Length: 99
Image 1 (cartoon, rainbow, N blue to C red):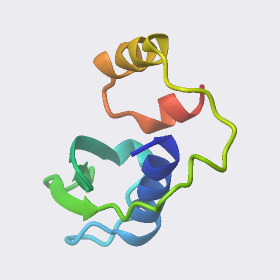
Image 2: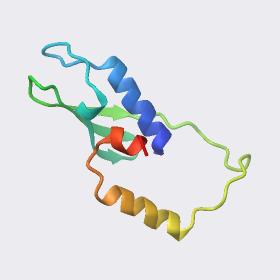
Image 3: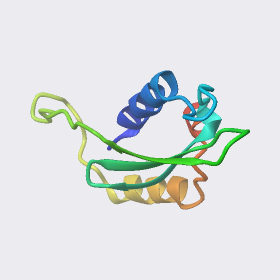
């Protein structure tokens, strides 16, 4: 799952999911990713007036043809940089997407 997949997921949740108790729309800062296993994403949705909601969302992966794209192979520096970003990541996607 890449940044684009995560952004699409968050945008979809933001647009379509409401607090089941009051109907309030969740804003991006209310949505936290608690884990990803294969194509299943575990979300925590926080309403200011109610208990958090835990949701599981299945991500449909699109097949990419990497042979058609001119891309460089992933190098160890790419993995290290990704690890540094995710090590202290709090789930705040507004912050990470504004970089």
